[in-house]
Length: 446
Image 1 (cartoon, rainbow, N blue to C red):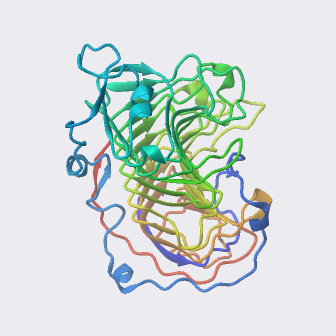
Image 2: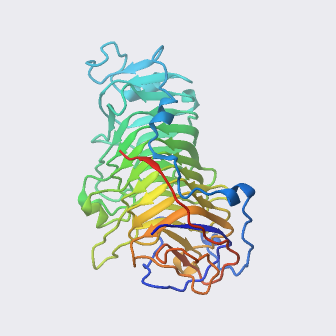
């Protein structure tokens, strides 16, 4: 049974397990600034719902399209081919193309130019560096037919496509694929797409897949992110981008990742699916969308699934993977809404967070907790506070998750006892009642 959870919470919550709750552990790859991991006994008042929120009667995403939205995509057509720079690897599809490599065309481009890449496989890293390329539109001539493939010999930075110092760039309709081959856990994290010191990028309708090592013995290395907004290894740098209408799958660690102060991610209408490779699930806890280190994000209308960790004894065993993790964003900056989050280990997790809005999501058929709220310093969490949880349909595998708030005022009336886990040594104040609602949804998952 799925029920509405309508809570406006001041979330500094008690950890008292009821039922057979799962043993949630914080992903060690998603660390919080130690200065923010502090115990708190503040009894903050819950935020008051607005008139619009109080009148809202739609459960979950409602009739909104979740995942790739064909109508919205058609409303933003590709750039005109008039005056474009053409690329063809073998001159069979576009015999008059000027270049045979994407990088050569990028190097020759200037502000607001358009590059059209004809069908073929381009085994190269692509670097879009410097403001000379501001406003560049780099597009596959036919959706997903131009393939950017990880080359056998790679160079720093270890991203397949790197945006650095070029703003307002659009990357559209490519297949961007690994695997990469590296003999160890790389100090420079391998990323499918990396946005660093670059802002207002648009990553639109690509298929980003197989961003993982080709060597199974190294599947446990904490790298292999499909899309990374902000650099997090060998230095740090912010970035901002809309990541929209993409199919993202078969990654090693994170599907979409945003890190660092000054970074902003808008992730919308993507289909983000974890690896189906059992060898990856046995050794690394992959996640769908991860936002931390003071990055901000709006995560909406995505279908996020298949992030599961099995583990191999005597090491840790699952569940550990999560559909959406949003930690330590600036107060009031971020939201997670109108998503479908399903068939992960955990649905949504947040901690060390003030003023987060989680609303209109459909969180169902996850192995363990639908939503995890952590404020326990022993787990590396600072308190989540004054956050809103509204009109979200919650369900979980029966007996695999738990309410963990036996001492707390947590809207438990008519909600499933396997929906949420709240982890903290202190107590919340203030919560609205729950209401059941009927929901409908429209989804395209490809």
